[in-house]
Length: 259
Image (cartoon, rainbow, N blue to C red):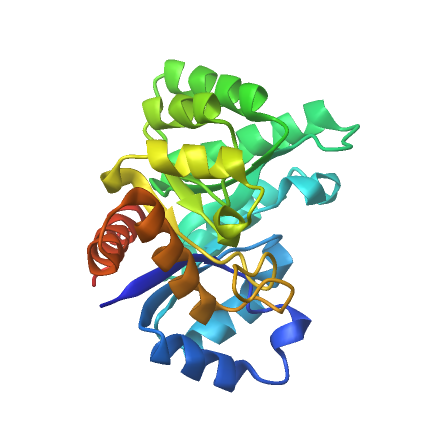
């Protein structure tokens, strides 16, 4: 059995002292591939150096919506150049919209649209962070596609309603669930997880955040994606091996890496 953790942040300081042990644990847990997300382009050299150490690591480059105020008009070219510089770059992001307590909504949309242009030009999928902004993100994507360009990507750490989930499935997106789906009160997330077709389902940790039950409250790490997989298999009434095989295949198809 192989698993893919499609969203990690192991460059964060909380992993600095024991990253080799963390890697050994994810290997022991059969995590064969990881996709390292990027919060801002300045992280790129460190993330690339981690991929040099851990060959199972692929990665993205982009600017998180909560960092939209760091955007400069030269950053699109920077993201494009970084993405073209290394074959291990498998996505643009994480990008998106986060309107929770936001007062820069129009600027976030501008930053998002600029990064969508890069993704479409390079034919790379997008890793989407979307919080309290599903209708607005949907509109941006629909407008972009209506202009004649195509997009593919994943709604990461998804917590939207079933209705919102269907919006993005209809737009061709994959949907990824984190440890949040294991939380007792995450009723809406569980409903959405039942809605996603097998061929669009992905799993992730979003580590070091949101550790799943039974590790909740601890620092999250890639090995814990096995708990997300186990819970989703039980929720969806399927065998763990079947879910692991399908989500691994889905990850390889979206991010275009060989298994």
